[in-house]
Image 1 (cartoon, rainbow, N blue to C red):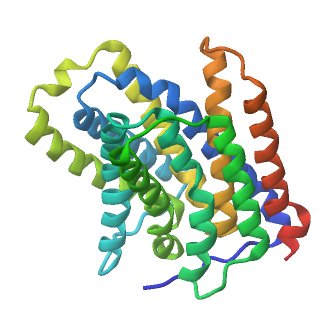
Image 2: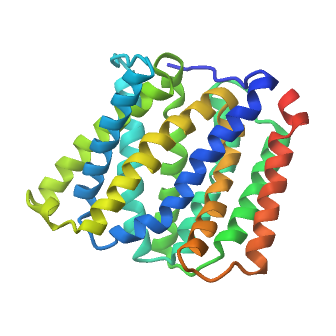
Length: 299
């Protein structure tokens, strides 16, 4: 099953860019919040997060008059692919990768997503990658890498970093065939309830049935923020941007996440960014301008 996701008319492109950038802002801002859960039972906390996010999504979908269709046929395979790769394996890879590599290594892996989406996204719809978008993706990746910084890793850590990259790209690419019929709301609702079930089963098997009682008040607050901001809001905004901009151009907006993470880190007491971070922010901005500017949208 293939679906063509083309770029929208120029008049709606600006709002789509803002939508995607806002989603990535939530993603970047969640980095510091996620650190609160470093000692929490991973699978149980994630199950609660996605279950709460699904309830929020269903409630707002009804208020907004959005219909959520039941998946059928091959759509179940695409949904399970998004959940299995983009949510479950992604989180496992982050945890296991952090045991062998510094956080910056995994951050750079995520920052490389624009290149993957710029290449694979058009190929999925039977088109050739666009040179301008490829160049913009490379610029955004370099800028995001400067913001993240470099770190040390062994071979195992690098392997997990590659898994992180593949899973992060899969979160977007595997959803493309679903967007035409289900839209951003439908994909978000179905992936969150499926993720809640999968993480819940893993939590029961690995962490035990009483793991939820181990969560502290601060950890529950963090789970609540991730459920609403990072998941319910960000998922809908992101998939809306992908459906309107196309995977290649929407992928450029992932460069906003490390910039937002740096800003939130400073707001929470981290040292002010150094020269390389400011340079990276400028490079990310240049890449976004190259790939999403007026000239690029008119093409």
